[in-house]
Length: 88
Length: 163
Image (cartoon, rainbow over all chains, first blue to last red; front, side, top):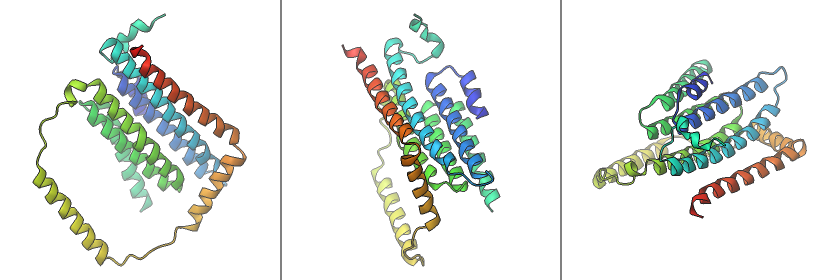
C-alpha cells in the first residue's frame, strides 16, 4: 500500500498512476479479507465485500484506460501534468 | 511452514509492486504488476479464501493486466508494431516437445489419483453465494449497473474522436 501511495505521488506517467491505484486497491482488499479471517468468529462478509471491491476496481481500470487512450489521442503524450487542456 | 510461505509470497508481492513502478520499460512494468497480482492471489489462498483468489486471478490477471498491456501497445504503437526478431521456429518446437514429454512422463509415473474437492471449501462457496443473493442483492444489481455504465462510457470515449 505504501508502495502504491509513493507511486501515486512520485510518478507523472498516467499508466503508472493507474498501476499505483490498482496496487492500493489490492492492499485494501487484502486487509478486508485478513481482518474478516482473523475476527473472533471468522466472518464471510469480508470475502463478499471484496468481491464487490474487485468488480469496481475492474470498472475503474476500464474507464481509466479509456481516458488514457483519449488523452494520448488529444495530446500525443501521457504526462499528467501536461494535461492542462482539460481545465474548464 | 505457512509462515515461511507467507513471508516469501508477501516479499515477492511487494518486490514486484516496486518493480512495476520503477522498471524502465512500461511493458515490463505491466508484467511485474500482473505477477504482483498473482502474489496477492497467493496471499488470499493463505488466508483460506479460495474464492477470492480465483476471482483475483480471473479479473486482475485475466482482464486488467491484459487491458493495460493493450493500452501500452496502443500508446507506444511505433515501438511495438514492428518487431522483427524472434523467428527461431525449431528452437520453439524443441522446447515444446521437451516440455510435453517431461510433463507426460512425470504425470504418468506419479501416484496421483482422482480426488474429491474439499467439502469445507464448497460450503464456503455456498455461503458466499447465499450471502450475495440474500443479503446484498441490491448491491449486486448496482455493481452490475456500474459495470454496464463503465463499458458504455469507455466505448463512447473511444468513439469520441471519430465523429
